[in-house]
Length: 263
Length: 274
Image (cartoon, rainbow over all chains, first blue to last red; front, side, top):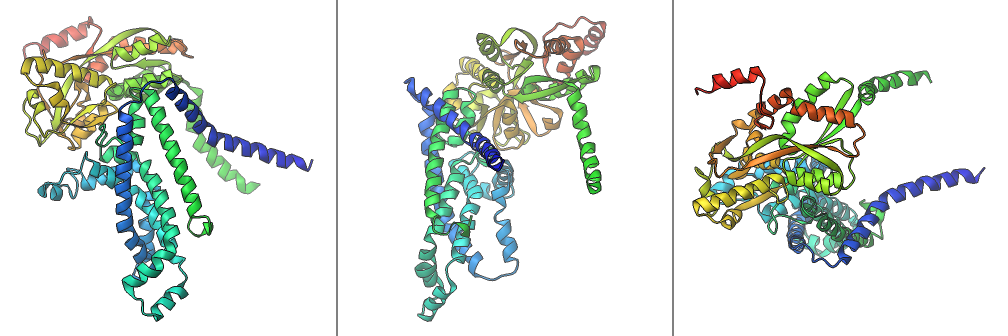
């Protein structure tokens, strides 16, 4: 009688685990068997992979360069509505990507708020890899911001105070003390942001369109290949599963020492 | 316990419409994206005539619909924008015979302010033009490619030069329409029936000569393993009836069944002098 509840718990646990693992397993088996029949991969696949790696690379560079100062300002400076700003900046985390795409289109599209300004500068973003990058930055940056803010907040105040006593101020304090002490948190945040950027679909297809070799990233190829060739869709999915797994392992390693701090 | 009474009653109240839906027989109809508006109207009309039926529409490009069915999705009726997708289902033994219920024509559309100043289809090869077509595999793209071939033989333009102007390939014809109506691209190819009243003032149509334009064929079929074959047959009969055909015509399609009723003869005669 005493063992019964534990057994039923196990049953529920197994159902949950099976539900989460089985679809990925099926994709794995189908993808590998499709590969085994020796047919050459769709040429769209390497193009999409290259495009995805290049655009997410640029996106992460932008997230680092612009996101790190923002996270620093948000965790160190005191100004009115700081908490509110901090929360609003996390909105893209929970916003449906299609809404993000629509918002970008209404802002930066040809008929958008800034569209006329950009057009007068002869800059045309829509349907270019630039649009892909902007969509990725928009949805992925909050992952980095969150982790970076928490990382900066976790730097012990006495260390910074000690550095200040020794004469470190402003940028030097940030570069020599706070940044090195938060590297692990920044790395974990960047890894998750990269995963989000790599998987970006809704905002990209709305804002950047979908054209092979130009704006069709891996997730867009999965969707598009369903019109033509299921095997291509499965193989693309397989590569994305593999990349996602790498990201998870890396993020897990990076956040190991103090996991509760920022997730 | 008594505290629970009101919330439970409230929940039951919320469930009532769902229960009414459950009591009706669902009829799963997979229809091409270009049929979206007319099938919504047909759904309402068919449900009014058959209150025990609840039509559930699944609207996507015909190629997506065929793929969903090939992957095991349950459907009672499939209405496609080309014969190719029905043929794929027939090869897999999923449908027996199909009937053509409508035709359509292509339309070359631009945003209403025509940012690229396009006036004729032979300009589609002009460098720098931003074109949006449907993705290869989607029926309207097949018709678009046929149209480009005809254009190429008559107007001395290269199909490759036109395709080089593509900035995006969409998964169904309605998304092509969205790009144009939203003003994101310079030109796109859709069906005439896609120029719905609510979009008509956001786009302009570039005339296509009859010998360049292509006729799209819409076949409908009942799935071999349909759980509601009788109702599915009834819907197809409704589609082919004069009421269904008239509705299709109202939405910009070309009826497949020649009209014979007196009502239509008189309307044809009054329309003739113009």
